[in-house]
Length: 294
Ligand SMILES: Nc1ncnc2c1ncn2[C@@H]1O[C@H](COP(=O)(O)OP(=O)(O)OP(=O)(O)O)[C@@H](O)[C@H]1O
Image 1 (cartoon, rainbow, N blue to C red):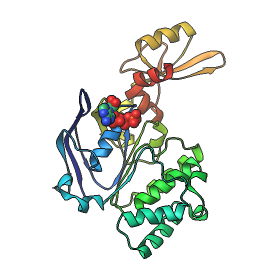
Image 2 (tube, protein in one colour):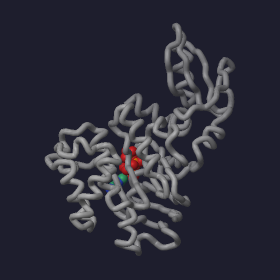
Image 3 (cartoon, rainbow, N blue to C red):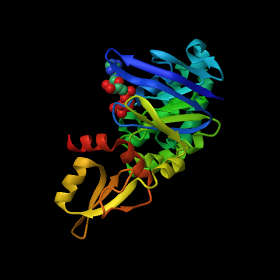
Image 4 (tube, helix red, strand yellow):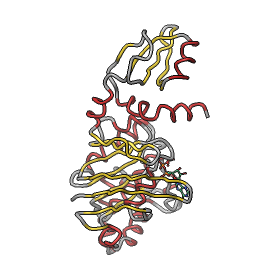
């Protein structure tokens, strides 16, 4: 299975949300990292065919997915960013209802609902109302409903938003299990979501794909560009004006900062090994700082 995204561009009236994005995807996990408004949701919605691009194509094994209709939609499982999921319905009846909408027989609906409830570890709460579940549980209901027809392409938009650290870990292992023989795409703006969970990182910035590589390759690219220094408050102000600065903390009275720059920014800065958290700050330092201030 091969999903080819070719020169996708999407313009909304005045705004270009995606600009000439191309990539080739094989089974595995792809995480799309980007600041707010970088075009992640727009790209996911085009891949699901919910949204048409202004130009460009999405091909599955050489066929244009917009011409495949139902044949393509049965291969797709989509977990959108915010879903209501009928709060007063109980978990299993909800899944069976979605199964029916997807064209499964009543017997298949029951079997598939029970199978996926076990897979996502929700079997014990199958008789509870959806509104009574935690954020992480609702997220898993979303995954179960997307998996009912065994899609070959699973798309999750911001699946870890609102999850606590334990739920995030659970989510990671669930996704790792699901990615065998499937293309799994998920969007995030949380760098730690990449840790030990993704095969490829796709970095979207202002609608453009600026990098697509294995996380270890991206870390390799950052080598020599991540610096650490101990500074005073005045120096910190100065640094923030001139450089991308991240993870500021106090260490026995001094302020420890990480600075992202292709060359040594100040003489007292020492080069350090890049970590997964640095990927986000390196690419989106400016936006991260704006978010912090606003
Ligand atoms: N229906 C729309 N009409 C007009 N502009 C839109 C529409 N949907 C998205 N945009 C704009 O397109 C750009 C990309 O939006 P998109 O939702 O794809 O980004 P995102 O990376 O998913 O952001 P977020 O993390 O905030 O969800 C943004 O500037 C957004 O304001």
